[in-house]
Image 1: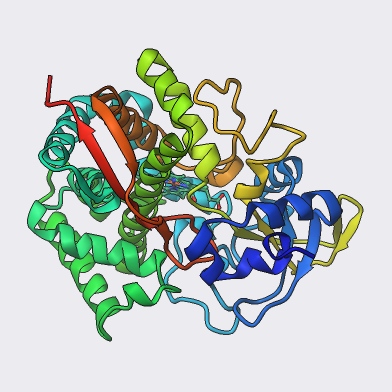
Image 2: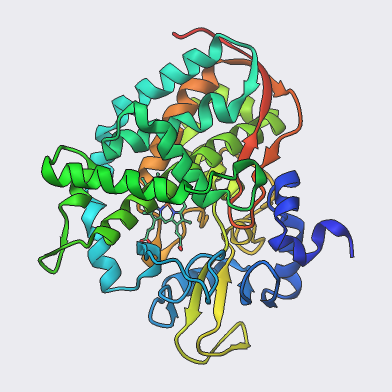
Length: 400
Ligand code: HEM
């Protein structure tokens, strides 16, 4: 067995940190054991599911595959977090919670944010163009979605560092570079409850006010429920988009023909955005549990057992995608599962895509030269593919 296709790498944070997601291991699993029982010291056991069709089936059937038991791979059944988020709910409860901010993220409302997104893109790329070298994650990929999620929630720029800390806490807890001080969680909770209390007293035109004053079945949200909404937005809305932006630039650097194609035909940026989300797959390995004895691809699964749906593998499934390991900015159709599908399909996908489109429309035409200035480095993780260091040397044209 060659090291790179060892199925154990699917749960090896050090490997992910060094190389990114272990695609060779997932390819082998799809071919040899697409529904595989997995045990490890790191997490509770589960059936790992790697085929696109199976993941679609599971995601679209919350009656058979519940999210209420353990939705995230890093949750331990004997030490479940006190706070439940939307990701931990099934319909009809889930539907009621999702309604709270669905209006804010409809394509119509998101389009209204277009001008603001373009201004952020211009500002960050202008700043980037004053130098010729740096870590693209810090220069652009992380600040762009951070600024957007703060504006959406109505949080001022002075609190951006705190919001970033909250997002990193949830996403990078396997990585020694992101260890926080002991009272980090308490600080996150204090920040969110202060924000919600202030918006309850004096509502504004922002998403934090919508959450603070929301009710379900005519009862106001409990403080812990409201807080879970803010936390899920901050965590789901920031690192995912940052990873897609940085992973997207890395893919363009490693595929200069695709960058040239995009520069010659900027109208392809729309399909390129979906291809980036497919190719990078920022989040993977979410969980559901069987509500009754069943079978998947002929494999018996007992009631109560967990299945882990691996979106990164689904997005390279050779039965669905032609040349799945190739990065093609004009791939169309592109039925990727980078945003999930079914009940929990990403509620922020329109915003994420518009953010990426705005940024790449500003950046791509201005690139005169770009190359790696060192080795890319990902966060040590086993459910997110997130670059923490993308050192680049570049020359950008000045602002038009
Ligand atoms: C490229 C960026 C993004 C990616 C790749 C992404 C990916 C995902 C995926 C895969 C899921 C489904 C998880 C599952 O099936 O269990 C999801 C759900 C979610 N996402 Fe995103 N996301 C992105 C951006 C955003 C943004 C910008 C926001 C908010 C502004 C957001 C908010 C959410 C929320 C609240 C959920 C939970 C939905 C539910 O449980 O019903 N995401 N996202």
